[in-house]
Image (cartoon, rainbow, N blue to C red; front, side, top):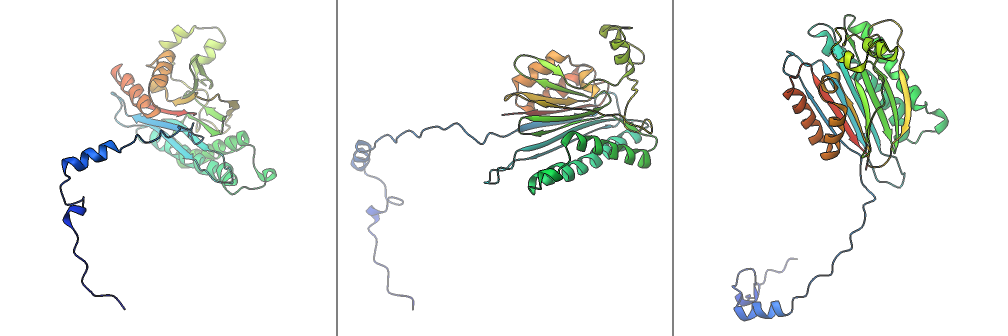
Length: 299
């Protein structure tokens, strides 16, 4: 049974929420106020992988044939599931719609396959003996994307470059002339190799890198998804030092922005701001192609 007797009357001067504080009261409070003890700052053990991504049609093209994909998972549980990141860039080739369909197809198919074969076994703590080696899983996913592309978009082709980050290990796969760079305070290193006609000529010492910049067949690829029945994929695994960044970009960026500029801007800004700045810089220099960049920064 609820008590319905009247509530006692409250002295207004005792209600500091409604009554004005007298000057003498404030002086008394100030006299008895002590500085709160400083809270010790701990170095965070929960620093996460951070990323940025940006894409733009550029200043010349009427549609964007680039595609990119990022998936990052982080958790803090007693299961100690490692941080996981999947990063991909594809630069489509073909007619007005064939290029964009080609890049979208390979990103969708390969990402779906990799999340199934690499990430889900980690999340479910599957037996290690049942897990596919990661570089093999990357090769399988790229091959599956290639077969789907040949069947679904037979007149389209595309580059595809990507990596999986688990802890400080980067597992890399690459086809075409989109590029993957490793960036730190000391230098920028191109991890991928361009599968282009002019790069082959450079390797054969028939032309110089400077001559390649103006070569009429600069954009001709000898290896890409959708070009032929068989596909060869470059794969590698690298240990990445703390504080380093990995950058993937289409040739619409690296063709207009020098490597050292990629490095300095990546080091100067947080990943998303760095991506936006690099795309703006490429557009300022003509934006002659679609521009896509993804940056992943390790804590």
